[in-house]
Every structure is written in structure tokens, then in C-alpha cells.
View 1 (cartoon, helix red, strand yellow):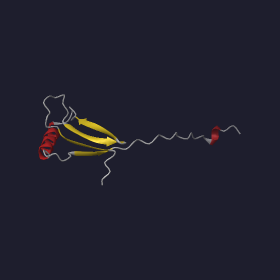
View 2: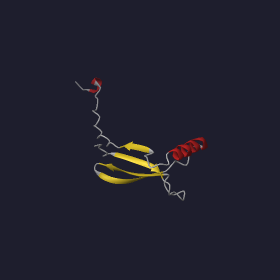
View 3: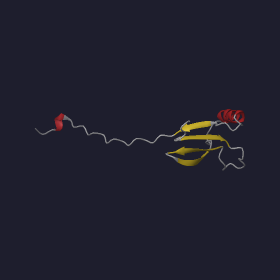
View 4: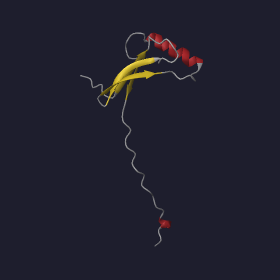
Length: 91
């Protein structure tokens, strides 16, 4: 059995009717909690990239995941050790 925790998948949103609707929709699980996922293509994408994306989306019109995403928590930042220049020590 595949562990799908901390994974998301999105598909082409075939119900997109307005520019405010997401281009891609999907679902997934992060730390055992289920989520709906929505994604939009940035407005500053070049026309060539838009055509390429549209072509890719047409190829994936089936319900197979278009993009799979793995999610991992950021590790807590460790406090940087302060380095002391030996010249600064008074003795």
C-alpha cells in the first residue's frame, strides 16, 4: 500500500468558467489532514509558455494527476553560533 501522506495532486479544472477560477484543482494529505488544492497560472507567463501549458493540459484531459506534489515541513532553523574573533577577547 502506498503512503500518500504529505502528497498533493492536481488536475486540469474542466469546470473553469471565469478567470477567477483555478486552472488546476486537486486534493491531498498533509500530516494526516486532508486538503483541497487549487492552483492558478501566473499572469506574467509568456505567450509561448501559455501555449505550451495549454498543450500539456489538453494531453492530460483524463483524470490522471497532472502534477504530483510532495510536502515536507521546513526544519527549525538552528540558531547560528556567534563566532568571536580572538582579537576581540580582552586577555
